[in-house]
Length: 533
Image 1 (tube, rainbow, N blue to C red):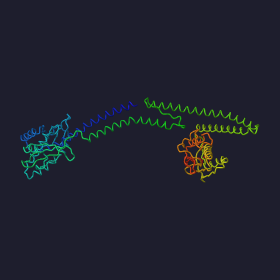
Image 2: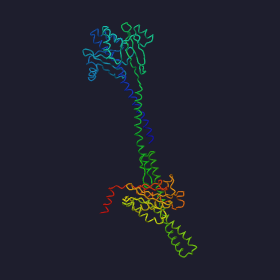
Image 3: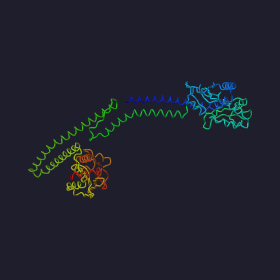
Image 4: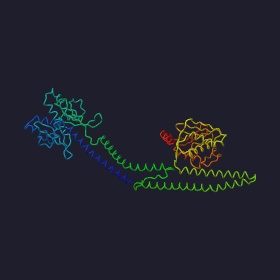
């Protein structure tokens, strides 16, 4: 499993890097093509305008001169002789300029339309200083064809062909050093590097204009950056997202299998001893599932053995206990008055032992039984019935009943619910100092039995529902019991899908709350209809 995950991560990382590299190359090729077009489109338009102004030998001379100055081959061909497709020709007719990436992946060819259905193309790799210098030459040549009064208007017209600015400035506005100014005065075309408002490197092209204190300024022209931050960050995010997606699908199956194991382990308990983890695969997770299943089987067998032993012992004890009771009764009939107290104490001990065996059997029966035959019961009537049966020995305790007049219906087994209420009441009577209160809330079916005894510490309120647990406090020291009464209450509540807990009582002692599930009206009406029929 883990080898597959590690291999998948490695493969996905390699795939991500390969895809990002290919994407980087493709995007950069497109960016390079667009950058070349943006730099050379204006120059190409000026070359086309010069070709259109001439014809015959003068046209050839013009092309040879420009080709020599620009250092790039210029080709004049007809539409039929061009390698362009009909779609490319339509794009050229619409946009007046077209850039074609050549098959070598390095060079590009820029196309424009000339007169007489001729096409002009210039093949270039990238725009170098020489091409920028000829651009300044062509602009000045184009302006020189007009009188001075119209040259500024012509300059504005030429701007539409360029993706960067062209202006005429005086010397005081030039950002050049003395050496660059000296070269400019001699008639050279000067290229300079500057910073724009975003602190990015840009190029500026300067050329003297008409031998006056005015200069042609081209730019700022952005310098091509093959690895811009936005592109690298985007590719990194794409690579991480792709790798993360692959890892997610690899781990998803592992997570699902671990979740199944976790659910089985968390829900494993007395009511689900037969639950096992489904085993799939022969990897580490499969071995873990096998181990958990083996452990669950051992726990189940140990609990079954423990129940069987306890039940067997309880049953076996009843016979000798009964014989002991019979013999003690016979001894008491013919015993002298001096021995009667001792025999009576012995009889009480036997009776207590008999009660312990009975509670053990009840506890085992509750663990083994299911919900059984459920019926709709009025909890208020059941409470009054139990009180009438057990209250006589506890007449010294003042009992306060807060029972509703309307029925509080619950679904359950009458014998089990009576046993639960009986244990709760006897527990309250034993630990109360003088007052016990029984309240039943209608609607929510909430039973509360409170006493004014010593109470139960907060950290022990969950533990007391475990079998044979007796608190080492004044609450339990003199009240007897075997630690099974509350465990039986908890088992009965669980069988009836009820919740039992201990909270602080208004009387100062402990308050046992039992919250029963609310009965659905449809279920109640169905039960009543069955009884009537």
